[in-house]
Amino acid sequence: MARGTGTSRNRTRNGIRTRFLDQVSIAPFRPAELLTIEIANYLALNNTFYADADTQTGNGSIVNDKQVIDGVSQCYFRNVNIATVPNGIEDQGHGKYSIYINGLFLEKNSIDVVTNIGNDIFLRFFNELSSMENNLDSVDLVTITGKISPVS
Image 1 (spheres, helix red, strand yellow):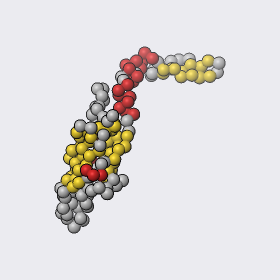
Image 2: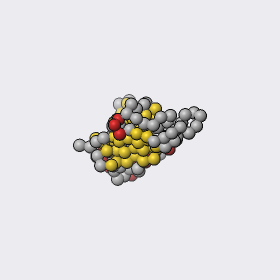
Image 3: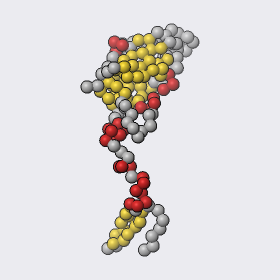
Image 4: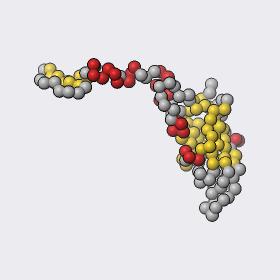
């Protein structure tokens, strides 16, 4: 059987065709040698946490006929932090997490600040860019999901 080019070869034994990887050809691309336990743990993170309702506030007022408000709203997620990006992975910025208010996605361009402050995550966003009709208050459900870890 003639061997073709590529990274694998086919062999037939007892009428059964088996495919083998050409280890020499793929050696420079072995992901197992690049994947550390820190990277594996980071990639596996996909947690969801809720904001502390008592910290949800805003300072906007109505600015147009669609009842959209200006100003900013903010809240804290208690006892959680955005996970540190390990060496070997590019920081995804706001792509590390998604934020929802009452089940609706918060647009990434409306986020002013989202950062770890001690054992908490602080979120502040522009009401107008997120099409908010009311300031955040204690009845809103704010969730964050993604590369987030509980602080122990």
